[in-house]
Length: 305
Image 1 (cartoon, rainbow, N blue to C red):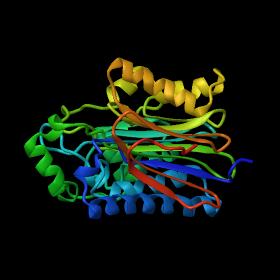
Image 2: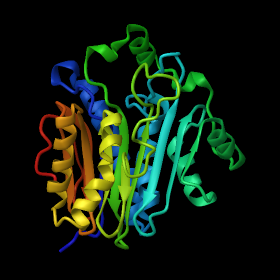
Image 3: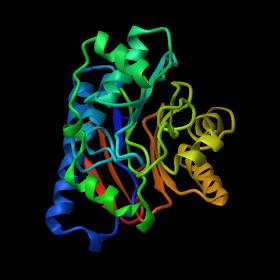
Image 4: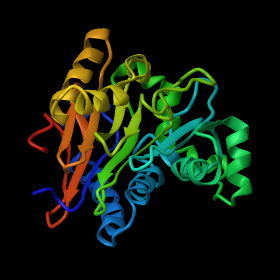
């Protein structure tokens, strides 16, 4: 019997190795994952729309300075902050996204506004910021985003020292049987001004279709763009007869053969989930109706199906 609802989140799959985290740091990261699950779960338990649930879950991660989205976003090569976000509803394939925005406290809310308040799918840069301002979205000064941790990483050019793939995202099946997905990111450290990865691109970083599944990706965005990763997973499920796990695994393996790394979370229209990654860890969490939440950051994905 399918679960009444299923919610899965991720907060990136950068070089997550136990020796790099104290017990206190591990606890802090996992607590934020639990808070994110709790925010989405409240929406779903109340019979809310899956789109609202994934936005609520992602907003918690954007407000946390530990993850590469919203307040914790990494710096560009020029020392600025440029953020991307997207949302999609599986019920009607409605989607909204923003790219290269600055000063918007919660980019996922801006993406949701594009979906609900405009005829467009993707707005970028100053146009997206003006649109968000017109609709009263909360802004923040540059100092809000410039955390000491990210400033130190930027000054040390630590992008050359290991894996740093820091997107956050959420996928869910709500109690009405509708799928939804969301994603938000600050991009890659020291990226070129104007660089846009897969996160705000529908069919690459996220996808949701009630006929198949909801997907959110994290990793080296250029490879996910080239593979049209999230849409390909949905197509394999809907038309190829693949299970959700098999479809996600096949696409991620293809990305690996191209030279890329990353991770994928997904939920299908029966509430089955897939959580896979090719890196050494991924911040991740899952909750279903009537079950306790599960969160993790190290090691293999485990049996989160």
